[in-house]
Image (spheres, rainbow, N blue to C red):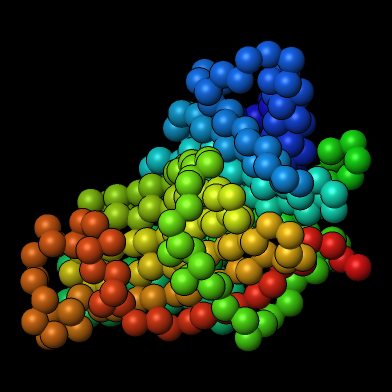
Length: 300
């Protein structure tokens, strides 16, 4: 890849071809588990799964990436990192890359509402200059993954409003978390980071992806979480679960948020040192938005 980061149009095609090539090479050699090239590939049933991990995007490439999506990017962007899942019989592809996650930080029309740090929050509106940017400076994203469709030559056409290559429908069904609690061997697992920022020393903003594969299927958690010190905590999560042999992937998206003033009023600690690990207090965040969908493997 000539660019120093994954782009929307070509990254899935490039990684899929790399993954197929590696699987073919592996078939003629002893299976080696080390991944000096940063590419971890797994093949199960009708699925190819590939995770690519690399270093932080250098500054010159970071400027180019930011210009392409019209924003100043976070301090740390892992622009080459990518998770790709492809169903070979139908060509359905699902990927996660930093540039697409960041593209979802732009405000939708009529919804611009910039957060202020705690120092600015206590000042009058005339003392605080509003940011003249079209994206959330905390890099809050509702990114749920990038869909596409691969052809027999492993070229991936990306999903768009003008080109709906993947059928996605709202549903009243839910992920069966009781099934996910059943003890099964983990055949493959990976975690990749997409970006991170310390919000000018006023908190933390992180986007990461985890995936695990079991004999019964696979499970993906795409998590964005943000803590703006003494102001607010946000947690946006996309969960995807596929049971092998079924015709769809269940996708559940939830957005949770709570103000620190509310947490303090409820009697929770008021020192930020207690809020460094979202896993320890995510149960305190109320859900403000939820969306449940089925991603069908085939369009038929």
